[in-house]
Length: 392
Image 1 (cartoon, rainbow, N blue to C red):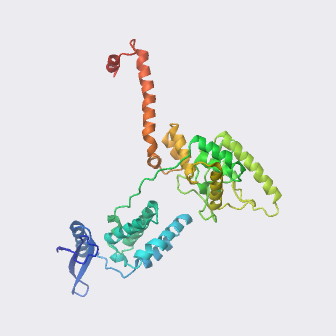
Image 2: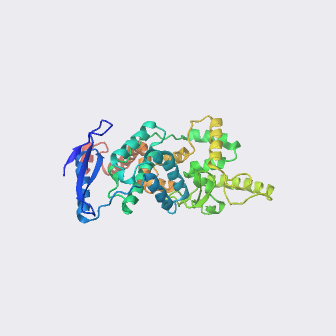
Image 3: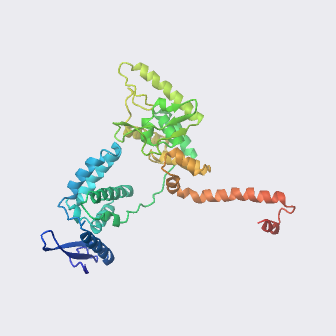
C-alpha cells in the first residue's frame, strides 16, 4: 500500500503517513493510519512492520493509555531498581519537563517527529543543560523500550531519534599558584581539609561528605570510597555514584597529616558536646556530628574563594583541577581514570581532550630526545642526518 504526503503537517516541514487495511476479528475491514514520518523511507519501513505483524498475527492494537498513565506504572517499577538519587533526578525531569509537554499523548501515538520537536523546544528554551536534555532522551527511550516489552507498542519511536548533542564546555581549573593562594586563605574556615581532599584526590562532593574515618587507612596511606551523601544532604548511602566509583585512592603524606590534624580538632568538639553529639564516624560533619549538607559546604567554599580573590570555579571543578594537574605531569590516563572513578578511560580522555595536544607534543619531544640520544651514542658522526636515516 502506498505512502502519502501529509497535507495536515502544521510546522511546514514535509511529513508522510501510511494507511494499511486489514480484516479485524469480526471479519470487517479496518484501517491503521500512522503519520508524522520525516521521510517516505521511514514511513514505508513502519508500514512494512505493521503489515508483517498483521500477517504473523502479532499486531499490537493501540491501547488508549496516556504517556502520563504509563509513566506512573514505569516509575513505580523503576524506583525498585535504581538508586534513590537517580530516581529523584528522573522524577524531577519527568514531572517538570516531560509530562507537562507529552504526558497527555497516548503511548501508541508517540512518534519520532513529536519527540524530536519536544527536544528542540527544550533546547530553544535554554533552561536545561545539554546533559539534562540527554537524560530526558535516555528516560523516554528507556521507558518506551519497556512499552515494547509490555506489548503496548510495536517499536520504540525514540530509537529513531538522534540523541541530542552536547556542546563541549570549557573546563575551568586552577593553576598551582591559585591553589596555594586559595588554601592559604581557606585556613580560617572549618572545612579547609575538605577542599584540600577534593584537590588532592579528585573525589566528588558526595563522596567527601560520605567519607568515614574507618574508610581511611593511615598506615597504607589510602582511603576507600564506600559511602556517599545524597544531594539534599539527608541520606547516606552505601556505594558510590557508579560501580567504578567504589575505589581505593592513594593519599600523599601531607594530606594525611592535615587529615590527622582535622581528626584531633573533631575529637575536641566531640568531647565538648558529648552529651548531644551524634557520632556517625563522618570525616566532615556539623559541630554536633550530623551529616553536612552539600549546599553548606559549597557556601563555605565560595566564601573562601572570594576571600582568596582567585578565579571563580565550582566545587566540582576542584576534581577537574586534580585530573588536569596529573595529566600535565604525564601520569597515565588509566591511573587518572581509576582515581576519578570513571567507568572507563575513554570518559577521562573525552573530558580532558583539550590537554591531549600539549601532552602529545611533550611526549614527542621526550621520545625524540631518547631516540636520537641512542642513535648519537652509536654513531661516530653525531650530526650526520645520513647516518640517522640509514639507521631508520
